[in-house]
Length: 135
Image: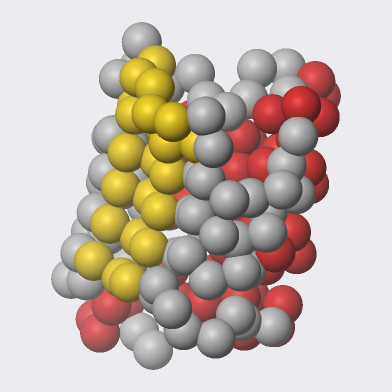
């Protein structure tokens, strides 16, 4: 795939496809880096920690991302820390959905034990505890 092919993509929906292997997640991350106009990414499909780390490494190349759906992904503490590290690069993020993952307080703490999920203004986050707005 090339930037010419993927550069105009604004929505990607992977909900319900078979979970990717770590190698497939790394390939998807390479493709995501070419999606300069992506606004919505739906990855609800059990990517797990290793897949999450590969995919979240591509998030800084998506500054226009507004919606990120990560429910039912078996994301543990390592994946949550990777997500927390990528969130500051997403200034337009408005909706982050995280229900049905397996990270705990350690993952919420983020890299180096600092603030993590997340400190973005006006981001609506859906977790097991329901919907909350961060300001």
